[in-house]
Length: 114
Image (cartoon, rainbow, N blue to C red; front, top):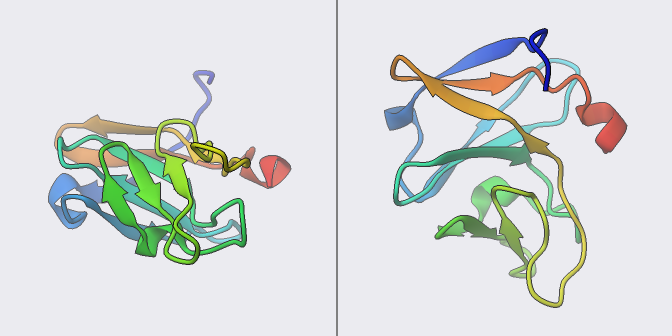
């Protein structure tokens, strides 16, 4: 990442349920799923499972992974990589917490990764 990154404020930690997700829509981009783990870490992925494009935001968060609601694929929240015998990866969006707010990096490169 470089210093030219544009950050988008999407709310506070409390806006995302613990061990849950929130969908974020950015004009001209694919929907993003922003996850909050049980230990209050926040991750963002494109809201599509690499398998059948299931909505990851509707999956079950366990540890630092999410289970896709369609076929139970486990996706690592840090890397977007399918775990176990499954293969595939969904794009990851950088997230940071600053002053009690959650910021996501403007996903300019997301279209190239999709």
